[in-house]
Image (cartoon, rainbow, N blue to C red; front, side, top):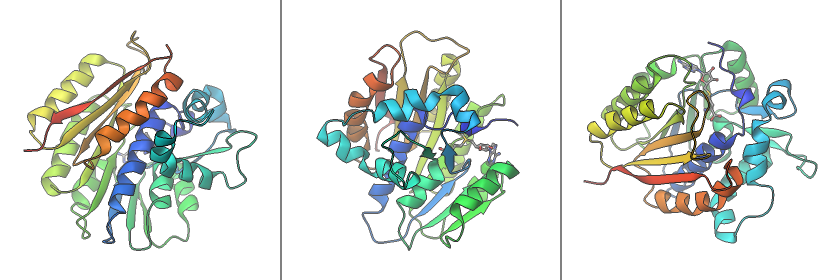
Length: 286
Ligand SMILES: C[S@@+](CC[C@H](N)C(=O)[O-])C[C@H]1O[C@@H](n2cnc3c(N)ncnc32)[C@H](O)[C@@H]1O
């Protein structure tokens, strides 16, 4: 295992995933009742964009920096405001001279949670886990766990709050990861029918993505939304050309919100100045 998210932090895929995550959290926070977040593959929580790894790829410049280069139309700014707020919190000295840090999913989850909410973050790499624990320190709402993310789906679901979200965001560096993701998602839904379940996947090998979508669709889970973004039309099988999310039980406004956001962001993130956005139901409400 040598995947290091620090190389990719803040890239186009993080931008899309984290805006969706922030929208789901805002929706969950509309009710006073506590919610729980389970992030099965949590990463380090905070990334130094001037550090060796992020600088080596510069992916964040074509991602978060391009997305936020100039103000977006007001309705889009309103929708991305919670994500932007987490970025601001990760850069307390401001970013007049550019972004210094990018927040990972646990940071965003914590930023948008309330005193009554609880978070479980699983991370298998000891060094990355130590960094995450440092970012999260002294927050009694959070547990940083060494638990295998796939096992966490059975060990910690359903949560006692009976409200909340699961983010499954594996590194996709082993064979069979698409099948595992589909199985993990379906198993999580079996244990917790009412949870908002988000599963992230890379678009590189289009056939593998098609097979994954078919497997998820066959499971027949009602209210399964897919959100995909391609950087350009031409795909090279060995390069990440897009990314997707399957969201089970999304907030009822999410599809429309992400259409608004992605229409504005696609030209900024895409290689060809346009990009391709696909948002639609794999399985609608019963
Ligand atoms: C794609 S990154 C996570 C990014 C993070 N979710 C975010 O959005 O900021 C995947 C992380 O999962 C960790 N990981 C890999 N296999 C794991 C497993 N079986 N259980 C838990 N964590 C794992 C990797 O070390 C890596 O930090």
